[in-house]
Image 1 (tube, rainbow, N blue to C red):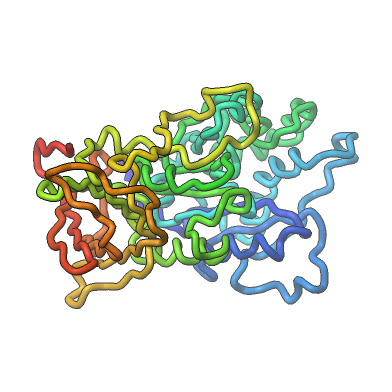
Image 2 (cartoon, one colour; image 1 turned 90 degrees about the vertical axis):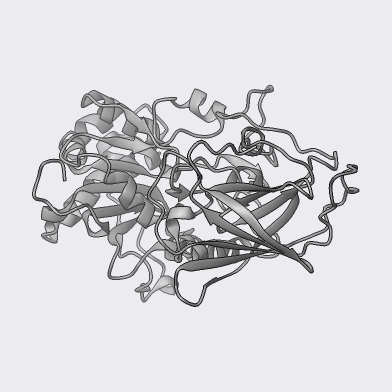
Length: 423
């Protein structure tokens, strides 16, 4: 790798620094424990104060905890929450090196206590970069005003901030000076950006990290994910449960059950057609399948439906850093929705079957087309995908509707043909 005899980057080369609060830990631990792998994942959660006795003994299913340094006297100010989070970078390095684990340390990943990481995809993503150089990776907010108010050049911590070890080391060395230099900033992520910029590097945005600065129903966004592998999700406490029949924590565990089978396809959108019925079928793997009662090209279906609301009230559009399409009550453009119900390996081990079940009736009349067929009778969509890891990120996968019978539709995901048009 990179002309070096070193082994390829793996999860053991990554150390996580999670910044949380003692007060919120009891509920937020559910998010962390959904992705944390005890005795495999490396890292720490930094609390603002010692845990209440009711939180002890500390569970082995959570990262080990540490207490953040008190910076109030050093900075001569009472409100130091932002600086505490930035200082966590230095504190993680200190802990790792004190335990003698600095030798295999390539990447530092900082996140919030409600960040959900997809660690296999994260390893693949950082492996594309030379960990011996300075790299600052992450994502902007999807909400345009968050970027305007803070910075368009910062990684938002809820979506995860990834720092190569040399950059994290340089930041730790300059941490006291940088915290003094930017003590007037009230944003941890903007302070991190400023410290990184002063070391001569800038953000390389990643499409798979998600701050999720939204309110309400985010299914429209999650069902139209970029081709990039899913790295992180955030703010599940502030949006509706992503599965309508479950609460937030149940929804998180349900989503991660799919991730445990195949992270490489998580939320990846695959589109195919039943020309005879005039259906367009879109699958967001591991989450949601949709049937439209008309033929629509990928350019339309890949644009997220604006099911969500802005993070905060604004004077008006634009609200987001991406294009959207409005919900439609027009029967040919309103999708039938089928949420992930179950997942299993197909006998023989070469395929994974995900099953998506209709949650509620669509609530509009069928599309009026002499050639088409209404899809109200469909209750279940079964999707068969390869049990092998998906490596290609230059192009989506394709699919075929292989059977329609009773109340069931069966779909098979495959590699797209050369020059295949999805329309």
